Amino acid sequence: MPFLVDGHNLIPHIPGLRLDDLDDERSLLEILVDFANRKRIQVEVYFDKAAPSRAGSQSIGRVKAHFVRQEITADQAIITRLKRLGGSVKNWTVVSSDRVIRTEARSYHSKIMSSEEFAALLLERSESGGDAGKAEDPQVSDHEVGFWLDKFDQH
Image (cartoon, one colour):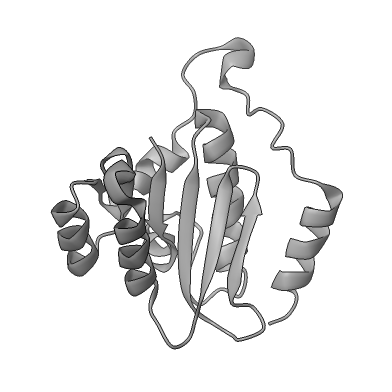
């Protein structure tokens, strides 16, 4: 089941991450990429208040990061995405503790998970032994890695 994640709503629930940290988004993305690869699922994460030079979307393996321009909020972008998903919206889980997003997600019949619950899920490690719990190769090109390193150095 794919996830739509309110990134800044999730960050305070991840041990070691803080919203006032300059690398908070990058750190969360690393965790999400690992999670998406381990679970073999798609994740879309939304961060608001992006500077004009950083606004836009980029894919990193199974994770698509949306840096929402300053004129709208991540909440609004997530709600717009829910509308565009059409009938497949019921297959998605929306991750947020924000009441407005949760209410909208419920009205579209998507599943809902609080940021606290998802944080616990992110930090779980596979309980099976051997190679079964290892993440598969994220298939991220050197070009993508370079792009993201450049993006995060533009603070």
